[in-house]
Amino acid sequence: MTWSGERGERGAAVRWEEVIVHPRVAGALRAALARQRMTHALLLYGPEGVGRTTLAGVVAAAWLCDRPERGGACGQCPSCQAARRGAHPDLLAVAPAMPLTARIALANLWLFEPLVVRRLTATPAGNAALRTTIAPTMAEGSVKDNVLPQRARIVVNFRIAPGDRVATVLAHAQRAAAGTGVRLGIVNNFASEPSALAPQDTVFAWLTRTIRRVRPDALVAPYLVLGATDSRHYAGLTPHVYRFLPVTMTAEDLRRVHGTDERIAVDDYARMIRFYRQLILDLDGTAVP
Image (cartoon, rainbow, N blue to C red; front, side, top):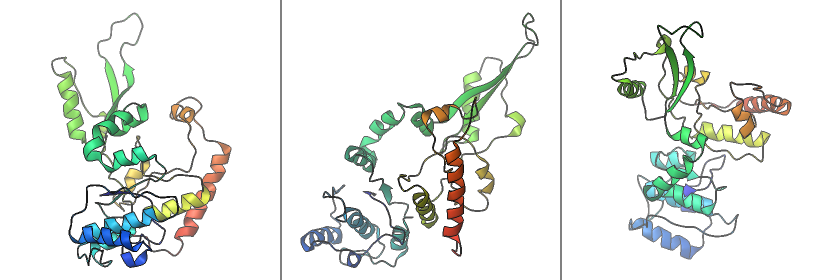
């Protein structure tokens, strides 16, 4: 189930008693929920600030509740608690900053997935986010320009997408090189599986809160980091590993990563200090899962 909106810092409303809704609207929705006769999608339309986001969350929580009561969520079962924390695996929030057409498409991937994939793959970054990427990074052959090489070597870097595996990528490369006489192997026996997706729960909400305090104009949304980072070494300690850097990156900055003139702005350096200081203050005395 998908809905458009964001969750409050203290948790989302999940029960009808926690919201103010026009009786006729609430009655129709609760009756449909009680009969389990909900349509495949609901479009809640109205001006900003009337509570569309909250109402969508209450309806979604009622549909997912383990012990529904008269067309509403009980508020106590594991499903309700997960929905309140924003951590229910079947409840996905689509950012309200997106255009209506984009929200409709993302909320109905069963129908629009081919269109969404085509739009994403039209850009290099979007294409790399959906597929395992292949990039030849090093090549060597002869020791002189007038001597034929006795041996040639090339290093190819794979950025493995979630859902793929090191073994399947290697098998694909071996099939591609079959019959060429090329021998394949893993350089220095170094290979790492794709990182697990970090949960969007209370910890993610804390991170979101800190980001907004430092950059109130920022839109916070989950994203797939396309490169490997040292954060993978912490995966054995906690699932809450968020690869976030409080730095503004333009298209020109991205082209300089690991290249000529790689740098960050002086203002961003100061902002990084403010962010990490604020994050420590926000988490001070808080029991982190």
